[in-house]
Image 1 (cartoon, rainbow, N blue to C red):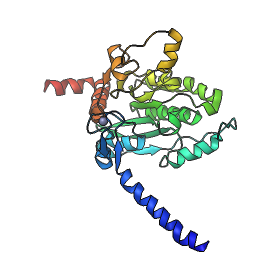
Image 2 (image 1 turned 180 degrees about the vertical axis):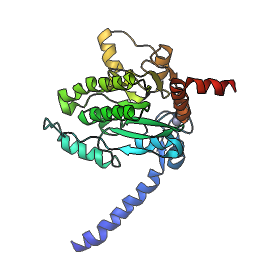
Image 3 (image 1 turned 90 degrees about the vertical axis):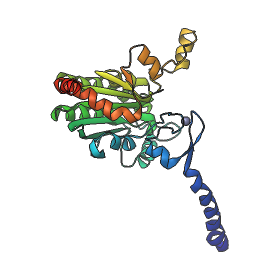
Image 4 (image 1 turned 30 degrees about the horizontal axis):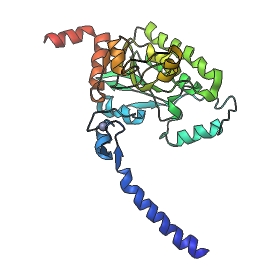
Length: 292
Ligand SMILES: [Zn+2]
């Protein structure tokens, strides 16, 4: 037995581990199916270097590309009662949460709130994380968005939201739905303070999030080819019994139909956001730059 555990098992592990290492260096683009070298892909902000497909990037990977010199302050989400319903499906909700947290590099739920300078102006960003239980909105996300709005008002800063969500957090039942109204009120506070509220819609923005704060921006930007909608296409097709048009619920389709103001490549987001905020907050500065 000793020989098996001390000698054979480590040998087997080493064999398996050696196989895994090179695989981790490459990934396949889900759109064009080309192989991408992990390091190039990360340096390219997780956009396919062959076809330009925008993959779902997690907030902590995105934020450094937005703030001046990549510097920002993270604001921990307010503590909330976890698992108020003691919910259990195939797994306990608490266990699911812990698993998601373990992979979230210190984030406690599906929202990351950060503040810092953008174009030399204090800005607050709240970014949803699809990698954390599908970016679903429970009490913690709602509470985090309220905090982000209050922070923006206190600092007289614009609020930018990056949306990416499958909708409400089923495991929190009605409490999850209550976040729709709470986040709507939070956004209104920013607007009442005369501060810009900008939404960047990313793949995918659906369900309760698209039915609340993600559709209330003064300006809506979207990443290319992102799915944006309330219910999925199959549900709609079955309800209205009609074929849906080509490109339905994609950024470009929504731009054509007036739901989105601009579709912006991930590499251009920072400069576009700075320009939009400057236009909204200091229109004279933009005019003088344009004239000069
Ligand atoms: Zn590709």
